[in-house]
Image 1 (cartoon, rainbow over the protein chains, first blue to last red):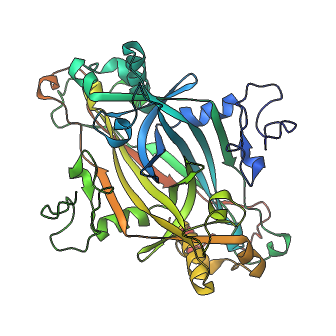
Image 2 (image 1 turned 180 degrees about the horizontal axis):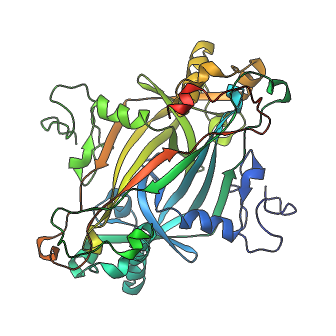
Length: 231
Length: 231
């Protein structure tokens, strides 16, 4: 049940927040959940890979795929021949999906095996995905998916032509029923375990980029663009 | 349809492989799929986070969670109070799940927006998850989940006591209906795009660990263990 009397753990009172629903309020560790726009957007905007879940023949399917956020809409694209997208038509009722994004920030080592954990930030979005048919919205979505991976790239590549656009399906999922969840900090050992002779703490994960590797057939006069150096 | 005449793209002829089913043969990019044990296991064994999908009230739910592989079994644990696990009973028919693991290896920048991609390795497992009740199997699974995150850690921490074990649910998913999928290499630009003045190539991702950060309350005489230095 939504508990509207409790402010979001990470949100300022009065900050814009997504409405809580039965399925966005976790059954445990509720203090790790938040609903404010800023937290949700920051987790989404620093990712480009999501795991998209849908139901096929009564069974769940979870596939990794690229996504982008544009305001309060998420976009996912794929081949018009791929199975999840074949089942999503503009004229139909849409496809119930769950789109999840997770960052792992650190490994949490406690003295007790039980209190081992990871530090993470995740967003879970529930909703109905629908095929986008408006040409302008499709163009915006496809540019956004390229820019979500490498900001600035969409204006430094050849735009899709008519044939490529026809082969590409774009689906939209509105940010409406959505929650963020995160864990930070060190291990939560029981007081009686603190003197045990086991190392305890956090191993932070380091995520980065190695030097860009040009294609073998790249014209040597083409320099590495600034938006790649900025990564 | 299973196509047993075609060898796995990455498997040796005759190597042990998982049987193909309708839902493990992708509808497109079949050349990126493989079924041999070695490929599937290597992708699973270098991960500890999965995205677990299940169906609740007819809608998909995808949650990030830790997992471990022990032979041909995957284990996931959680609080006995968490929703996915509450719906999985030893006495019932189990819970249909899809467990997906994804590594992102690089960003693939093509001259054309259309051919942008990522290099990745993923495994998708379909099956019925069942609660583990055998005490010895539960112990093996919980140790394995700790060791999947930090190899060697389970023997250097306090094992779960009776109360902790009672609060922990362990579910098992057999590796039976499973496939791997991967993309490697540079962009696949169309020949007529090769002379365009856009940088093309791959930006490899770097995944690593920063220096371990000890808990503030750690006895200074406890050294960083070798299995952490080895990370």
